[in-house]
Length: 104
Image 1 (cartoon, rainbow, N blue to C red):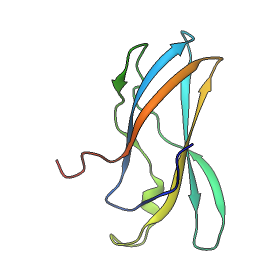
Image 2: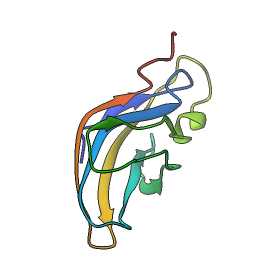
Image 3: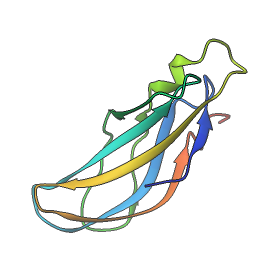
Image 4: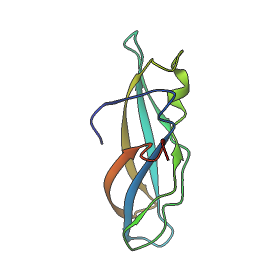
């Protein structure tokens, strides 16, 4: 699980480096926890990108979508991400970026 980070209209995607350690058919569930200004909290799935195979690689960009809940381009929403292996697999992840290439 990551620490909280603020996202807004200019941070639409999540990317990370990942490596599957075990399990041939395994996948990685990526979820985002949203906290509202009213103090409500919910876990929502992130649309999956290509998580690839057994060697270290950058994933494809995964749309976060909760960034669309902000009302203007200057508003931010605090979120954090949780990563859960599915189907008895094992994963390593590193270098989680929220929209690292937005300006390119």
